[in-house]
Length: 103
Figure 1 (cartoon, helix red, strand yellow):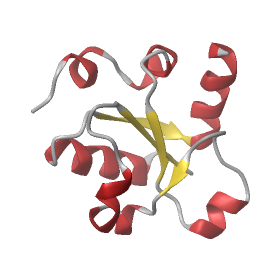
Figure 2: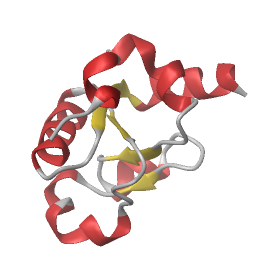
Figure 3: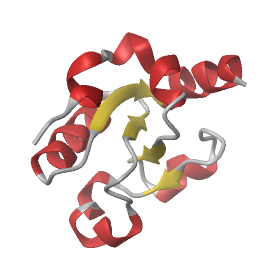
Figure 4: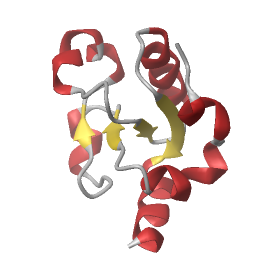
């Protein structure tokens, strides 16, 4: 079930999401993650989401990110279907930039 968090904000409102203490999930491969990632992000490759759900807190919103926004979009849709509150943050650089501005 989607609540106010996933309905109210769009990808361009990531800064607003950051004020709700979200979990930032980078769904790229570990190799890609090592080359740069959002500070504090958890790396769970999109193919491994189902086997790592125990690492996620259903009481906190989720922002997904990746290299281009495609995998993060898929991940956000999957997480929403499983009852999580998730949005696609797009590229990890975009999320990082918004996070830096919110500090």
